[in-house]
Length: 302
Image (cartoon, rainbow, N blue to C red; front, side, top):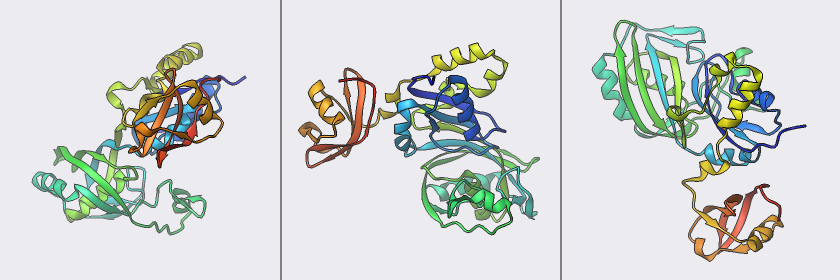
């Protein structure tokens, strides 16, 4: 019998494992059917991977809209087909930028920029993942997209190993491998990512990760399950930046039966979530003073 657990796990994914494999491990350990994650991390990347369980999976789309932070190290002098250390070198250059150049280039990337996603990405083309097409030898052409870079800071520079390490805060859909290559091109050089860590997704950050996947490898299965259950955070924790309203049982019942309800106090709010007895009832939009639910949650029986 499947467990009835709802909430979030602030997971820190190690390198060498895919996001889907991380989700599968959580599913297996907790004997769950509804588990998802808020944003794929590359196999070669580590970092924050918010795991949604049960009713929390209905909120993944909202967390996906949140800003993210990354810490990445790029190596100058070469370009790989994948944009990271796992790929094959396809081009080299002897032009290596200086510390001052790596420092000054950051301001050129602040704001809205246009990126072409890497061929080795999880984007789908006619239902097929781009990285599968690329690995099969097919030419992959992806459309440019606009993303936002809110901050880009040079953290360190190594003239011996020809690397520069940056931290950045960016919008959803930003590809760090592409950002690395674009930084290098702006400096008339080439680069690929040798280390990538996602340090924050919305309200989840690496400093407060409740679960490090690597740590579970040394635990017994019973201890692993207990540790996982203790790590689960409330479903509502991702909604702190969205207006909310407490409602009574009459309104809650109407929402459960798909009826429109008037909420004049929230007339000027676009997205809003409702709660009854501190339990999440629904999230939706306000239209002409009426609440129209997008997601309804099965936490209580009325």
